[in-house]
Length: 256
Length: 213
Image (spheres, each protein chain N blue to C red):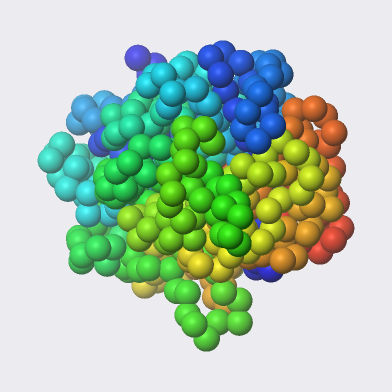
């Protein structure tokens, strides 16, 4: 269990102008306006917000900038942006639009030096290695890219260590198996990765109820959790999550 | 251009728009600039910054901004350094290599202490929401007057300011078994290690305090 103040993070998956949600990163369904959700979660006390452009990597473009510019007028918590970031210029454009941190996956797997380039230019604290992990059936996990569409044959544990070595400031660890299922986090994955690297690790994928979060915190040294569907479908509010984990003795930011 | 404005120093570091957005929210006029005259004429100055200390200092140097910032500090008008901007106020930093800072505050910038013997182990970078404890000193800082236990602020850093004069430390934050200086104040020179522009209403309140100084 961690001694940090646990971070509650809302994850907004974006396609074009829309907030979307899928199951196992597939079968994307439109939920609504992402910025409307961002403001709602901010006002309810979310600690951070992540915007991921789900199709940017596939089509080699990025529409996030416009959305971010609008969001940052009303949202005063850190924003991570990612999806389709291929180089320092892409990252700079997102930072200029209001992002505080940049998440990289596909391009970093193809060229790990991208992580060091970004860290050198903007600082490690700015670089989030987004890792999409899928069970390999042999007790380990394989790295996927292109928002879970493309396998890489890389081992997640090894890749996470590499990301930290190249200068990533934190890891956003998404379990493809659990993503969108509301059946709880991949606790074993989170536990292994957070024990392996020294930088903060954020768990993503599988949050259905607060009990899932408590389980995750109990059995891993994770620094925070990102959730999407649980909030988007209004099964839980940020405030409910915060109150319940506080009641269970987890250190977290107070938010009145 | 407004008569009375906060100038945010633009030296190509970080997301300056966030600070301007936060100031806009509290209805404070501001400009983002690297022009000497605009810095000189500002009523208050914010020195922002994320990233590495040596890069930031060499950019300030290349843009000939070191002298205008020091002059501003000497003018008695309020200067606020945020995150790396706070660290730049110090004598020097050991990040990557020993690099001289603006030398407005006595002391050095050092890596966060993550001692193996600590009972409480923490990760670096230190990322997340933490409290600031007001430190009783002879110097009163308007910035911290109404801080409460319910105020949490967003931190993201690997280095901290190690001040020589403990009287200039006005806020402390816990990391592992020890505390670091999260807010400093020396007359008109102020520094904040966390990001007030990213710390919700608590942060906006601190910025409001600053603009009222």
